[in-house]
Image (cartoon, rainbow over all chains, first blue to last red; front, side, top):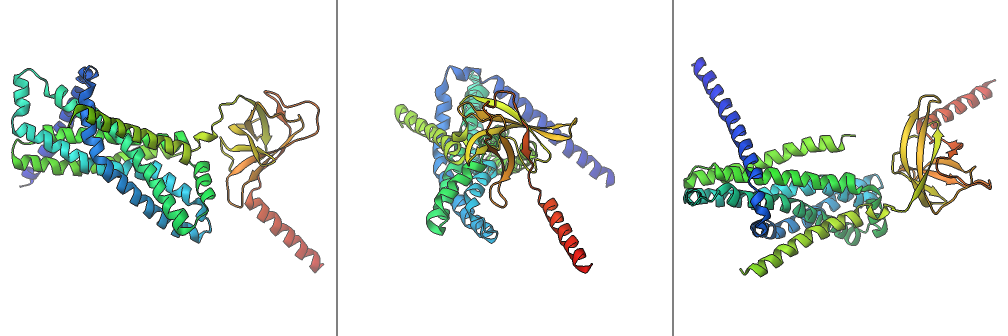
Length: 260
Length: 157
């Protein structure tokens, strides 16, 4: 009984480490085989349309409401210390540094990541990927690589849109609704938000999240079992794994970027 | 969907992304405060800089005339050596004095530059000799408490 559980633990660890190695090899393969995309940029722009334009509405609406809530909650706390003028700074810093990249990545995993996994999983289940290989078309270069790069390009755009719309949402609640002074709102924000330190690091974060979420979605789809259950399991796993990865990466990046 | 229409929407999305970044940089950030005008640097030594940080503004009569470039510690004099970048267009007499001030009660700290009366101006590499340190709240309170105690002692005698 005891030896049995030890053997199970060993097998569990082995399978997971093999999975990490397999994923790393696939990551390198995708990057290596993206050279052909330079000749066919339309493959990427088609995918930007599916990932970016279709996610635009959910990102913009979420950003607006997160901005509204930040405005209300921030005012409640700041008002106790008589510094409600700093509301603009609070809204802009929390959006550009944290909420913009992180919430966008979580929504992106739910909106675009799942569709990538399902699409590729169904391609696999329908043996389309095998058919491509039969015709000497490399599925990694033709199917995975354009989606990967489109995800990397799309994520920072969506995060920037989220933050910008959120700042406008915070302004709408703070200035016309609550009555914070408009000049102080913007000037405190401009005084406290550094372009490179805050906005720039937010962009770097969103690019890293874009790489992580897109790659996890592609990997789960490509490695899914070629059955309906397999595809549904892979889709669920995409959301769980990429959400946890985004949150863990966010902690690491924040510790590196803003620790001083 | 036609390819042209698709390209149009992708283009619109990319433009919206860059517009959002531009909005964050210009309206929410301080990109407009970045000055690309030429500047000259002068140094000043302070006993205590309090919470002064690099890129803090240097103001004269309330107008921003430059920024703090670097803060170092000088282990010969045991003072803080602050390098200021002043904009090329503004000239100050050689005996100007620098103070570390606080905007508002709890606001950020900046350097206030007060013009002197010398005929010669500060140039690249000059040294500001007259400085006044930041006011540290703890030492202010302890001074106040000591003087109170001293007054109380006098009344007893």
